Each structure stands twice: as C-alpha cells, then as structure tokens.
Image (cartoon, rainbow, N blue to C red):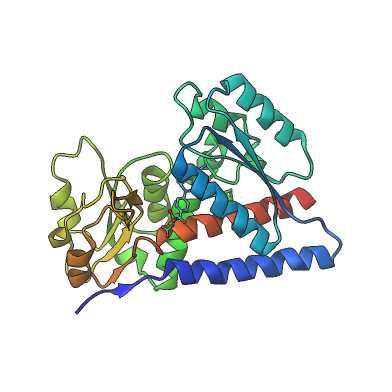
Length: 284
Ligand SMILES: Nc1nc2c(c(=O)[nH]1)N[C@@H](CN(C=O)c1ccc(C(=O)N[C@@H](CCC(=O)O)C(=O)O)cc1)CN2
C-alpha cells in the first residue's frame, strides 16, 4: 500500500495560526510586535524566492519584518556592520542572514556576529552548544520543523533506527542531534560513507538533506519506514523535486514527505516560532 503523505504545508499553516494568536495576544497586552530583520546579499534567484516567502509569512502572522537587500559586491565588513546595527536595535528580535553568501563573505564569521538571543536561524555556536546539552535554545529551523512533523504522526523515536543522509551545518548535523535527543538511534551518512545504501536499507526512519535529485533510490527504503525528504531541487522544466526517488519510495514507506509541500513550509514556520520566542525572551 502507498505511504501516507506527511502534509507539511497544512501543518505549517496551523502553526502559523497559533503564532498569529500569540502575536495578537501580545498586542492586546500592550506589548510590541516581534521584529525580524533579514539580510540578503547578492541576487541568487532561489534565495530571493525564499526571502519573499519569509516576508509574506511575517505579514500573515503580524511579525514586523524588514529585508535588507545588499549587492553581491558587499564586503564582509559591511555585512558585519549591519549585523551590529540590528544587534543594538531593540525593535529587532531576530536576525537572519540568508544563505548561501557570496564566497568572499565568511558565513561562520557572519553567523558568530549575530547576538545568540537574536539568532532565529539557530546556527550560532552558542545555540548549537546549548542544544547539544539539551538546554532550551533557539533551534535550527529545518531540523526543528522535521521533529514537529514526526511528532505529529506519532513517530516512536525511541524504538527507531534513524539514518540521516547529509552532514551539513544547516540540516544533517543538527538533524542527527535532534533525533538523538528525541531518543532515536542515529547513523549519519556523508560523502565519505562507503555504503550509504546499506545504511538506508535497514533504517526505520530516513532523513535526507543533500541537494541531489534522486540520490536515495526508492528501492533502498525499508517496508514501513518513515521518509523525510529535505532536498529541494529545481529541475530544468521548473519542477521541484527532493533527494529521494519519490514514486518508488512511496510504494514501500509507511509515511513520506512530498516536495514541495513537506519540510520547506515547516522550516519557514519554525522561523516564525523562533522569532516569537525571541521576542518573549526580550520582554524580560
Ligand atoms: N539563513 C538561512 N538560509 C537558508 C536556510 C535557512 O534555514 N536559513 N535554508 C535554505 C532555504 N530556505 C530557507 O531559507 C527554505 C527553502 C525552501 C522553503 C520552502 O518553503 N520550500 C517550498 C517550495 C518553495 C518554492 O516555491 O521554491 C516547499 O518545499 O514546499 C523554505 C525555506 C537555504 N538557506
């Protein structure tokens, strides 16, 4: 029987409704709206689309957003200067620098410059360190969103062998950490892994975030597994596809996320959640 689809788009819409209620409650109590500042450097078309979505999401839930669009030639020192200004601005609760950055700007130095309490992407080493120790923190949005999706389908983490394919800073590594904290037994496959297929074949839960269409073959998926596809790849004909060979995987899995409409909308919803949480923290 074909797997059930995990409806990230629908779930994210419900989370946005909750966040809107949280924002409205603040304004009724005389508190200011949460503020998000987004920095976009260069003109990568996909980044522009994502930043546009984030701006619309903020408008929908009542978060004040501002987007600073900087040319590709912007220096690292200039980006750091803008971050310093947002760090000092009390109306800004969250700062996000859209990735990837041009090669002449060091993303690690940029992320480290953001005040950890305004790091709504959850990428700052301080927040990652807190997450490692299970201390409440701003959590990286994509893995946080995946955990929320898995909780929504009643995933029994503690009984599961999970395999994460990909070990990026944004997805794979924090994803493995989140699954570990949720109680799963976790294996991470990366570019030096000798036999990714063998690991995926025995996994009860597979999370893939590499950015290569069809990297994980449908026939590798164990019968009844849960498959979370974080990949978003735009094909020449304009279609968006994930990293998993969807049609075949769907015949074997019990649950699977679609692309589009799976993890992507949840990443954006968790950004709103982090921004609201940061504002609550800033209330004192
Ligand atoms: N500073 C950050 N940069 C990047 C992040 C991030 O979390 N923080 N993640 C990705 C891009 N990303 C968010 O910025 C992102 C990508 C895609 C979606 C999304 O909603 N996808 C939709 C389809 C959208 C489309 O039409 O193209 C879907 O999957 O249904 C949300 C967020 C890299 N950079």
